[in-house]
Image (cartoon, rainbow, N blue to C red; front, side):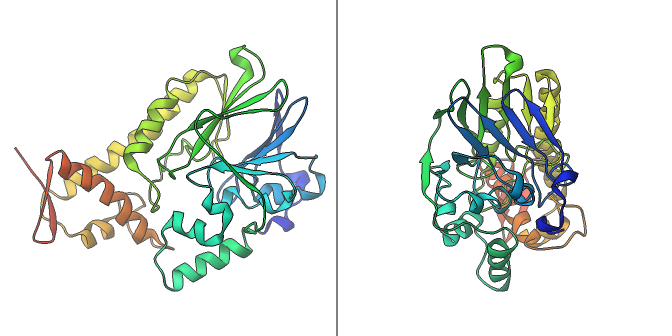
Length: 312
């Protein structure tokens, strides 16, 4: 469904203090997402303007800056609407806003027809923004909007520059919201299938979030708004468990020697038999990270073009 075909009246909006949550179509199901506007006494910022923001383009308030949790196509689809204000992204992801070539480098899509198709989709269906003023930020940076702050929590893994944001409007725990970006708490589990993804960093980022206090949590996709830290932590544990689930299934599969091609075909990230755009490449990268660390720990050997569990 193209964004211009959606009636903005059909898209839900929810207010938590100074945070206006602009829910995407079907609660932010990809390619849509849940964006947010944070309004202080001096400035207003929009975070991760999605296709749902494009659908609302005629009813948006005045915006002073755009802040990105990371640079992926679905998180920048509405950025082109905000020329004339700064576009902010972590310094490790900023090149994805500076040029389409930079964004393609983040994905690491191999050259060929799939690269060309994906690039064209980003430029057209996701309105790749051009010519904006890109301002990088780093860990701990605070955007002071006036009586409301947005603090950067660098949480790499999904991309090198992926960040969560702690939004505070007073000291009460109930008046703090953490925007989680693509640490999305779904049953699919963590996604670390791009060239700029990192499994170990993703686990470290998940652990970091376990020590953050807030009353509200918001994901870009699917789960949406979550109230209460205990509920969030239970969902985060379930989300994290998918990493170990994949690794356990991988070890079971390689009790016998298996080539990378066999591992890819078996499917550990996606459902067995599932095919589609770049799925083989995502399986290759994701399982390659698991295999690398299993080899480093002495649990797996690679010999004769095949991987096999070492049974002590």
